[in-house]
Amino acid sequence: MKTSDKQINKESVQRKALISYGRGPEGEEVMIDITEPKRINVKAIIAFIIILPVMMWLFSVIYGIDSLNVTSENYFSKGRYVIFSSVLCGILLNWLIQAIVYIIINPRSYSKFAVIHNKRNHTIRFFYNGDMRIVHFRIANILAHWICGYIPLLLGFIIGDISICYFGLLSIMFFFDETSLVWRLRHYSGQALCRYKSDRE
Image (cartoon, rainbow, N blue to C red; front, side):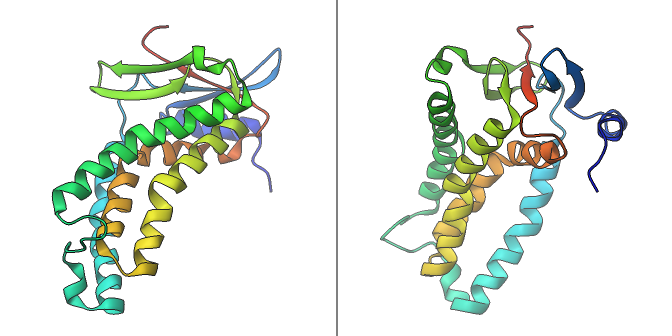
């Protein structure tokens, strides 16, 4: 059964969410407030602590204990390269793929891109400074997240290289809050307008 608009709005308020819902001249409108402290960071840390040992256990069961060492010369010869690459992929490549999707949807959208430093929680966010449809937000984020994190994680299991799994998992942690936003927006219509509220407003 589809959740009513009233129920969605009530749930968002109760959780003190970053998401607020309303109706305007063009129909449903969803506001994502990125000026509030990101409580999702704690969840990302907890998720990492839970997922990492489970991933390592599964990998060791399939390929053996020795396979847990980052010794592959084909991909990441040293552990620090895994961390450095995951930062670049989880942040910069993630942003680039999202930007490309928005440009394809609206060729003039490059003028509405913004990277904002949130002074309240000392985080940096890339966002589209204007109205967009939730369906476009979903496409941009889901595509970027799969390419930057989830596919490498699965690929590492398939080819038997734990360094690729470490890379994928670390990349996922950098955009875990975005994945959470996509999940929480599942109740809303794909045609609803979606926009960010930033410190500039």
